Amino acid sequence: MFDQVVFAGGGGRCTWQIGFWESVAGEIGLVPKTVTAVSAGGLMASLILMGRTEEAREHFWSAFAANDKNAYWGNLFKKESVFPQYGIYRNAMWELFREGMSTLKTAAELRIAVTHPPRLLSGGMALGVGALAYYADKHLLRSLHPKVALGLGFKQGFYKAQDCTSVEELAELILCSSCTPPFTPQMRLRGATVLDGGVVDNIPVAGLDQEEGRVLILLSRRYSRYPDRFTRRQGDQLWTYVQPSQPPFIRVWDYTNPELAQKTYELGFADGRNFLHKHKLEREIVDEQFQ
Image 1 (cartoon, rainbow, N blue to C red):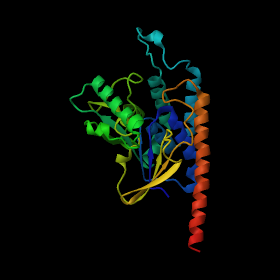
Image 2 (cartoon, helix red, strand yellow):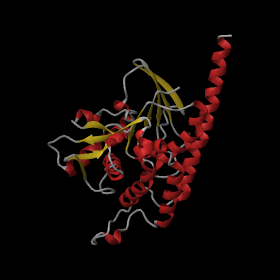
Image 3 (cartoon, rainbow, N blue to C red):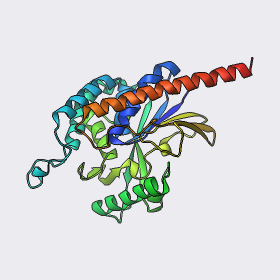
Image 4 (cartoon, rainbow, N blue to C red):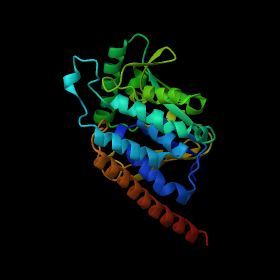
C-alpha cells in the first residue's frame, strides 16, 4: 500500500511511532522500499527494520526506571555528565543493534537525515541560529515543513544506514542526526560539524525517491490545525500524514519515566487501530462504488 515511509524526529515522543507501526504493519502489509528518518525517528526506524522493538522497549524502560533525573547539576564541575540522555541513548544502540545489523542489511533502504550548518557559523553559533529558525517555523509560523533554516544556509544531508559497517558506526550516525547540545556533545560527521537533522525539517521528506507511489508519514507531535490523518498530493505521489490523536505523554528529553513512555507507545497502538478502522471503511466505500 505504501512504497515509502517517513519517520519524524521527536525524542521520547517517537515511541508513539513504534506503537502505531506494530498496530498496522501486519494488517496492511507495510513493507516499504525506502524509509527516511531523522533523530529519534531514525532510532525507531532502525529498531523496526531490525525486528528489535520489543527488546528496545524492555531496555529503555529499564534504563529510564534506573535513572532518577534528567539533569544532574551536581556534576557541573565534575567529569561526569550533567545530562544522562546521551549515554543512555548511545549504550542502548550499542546493545540493541548487535543482533539486528544483518537483518537491517536486507530491509528497506533507510536514509538518516543530518543537518550541516553554514560554514561561516561556529558550532555554538550554528546551534543558536538553527534553534531559533526551528522554533520560529514550528511555534510561530507553525509550518509542517520549515523553510527558515534552508533560507539561512543550513542543509539537510541523508546517509544510508546500510552503508554503516558496524554497530558503532550506525549508532554514531543516529547520534549525529540527534545532535542537540547540551543534551549531546557537539558532533562531527566525516570531519564536518553537524546538528540534529530536524533543524532543517523534522519531517524529512527531502530524502524520498520521487517516483510515483504512496508515502506514509509518521509524525510524533500533535499539530492542532490538522486532523489525525490527512493526505496531500505531491507531484506523482500521495503523502498520507498520521499524527498522535493527543499530545504524547512523554517529553522529548525525559529519560526518567517508563510509565509515560509505555502510555505513549499504547497511544500509538490505539491510533493505529483507529487508522485501520477508517482505512477499512474507505475500502468498503470504494468497493461499493465499483460494484
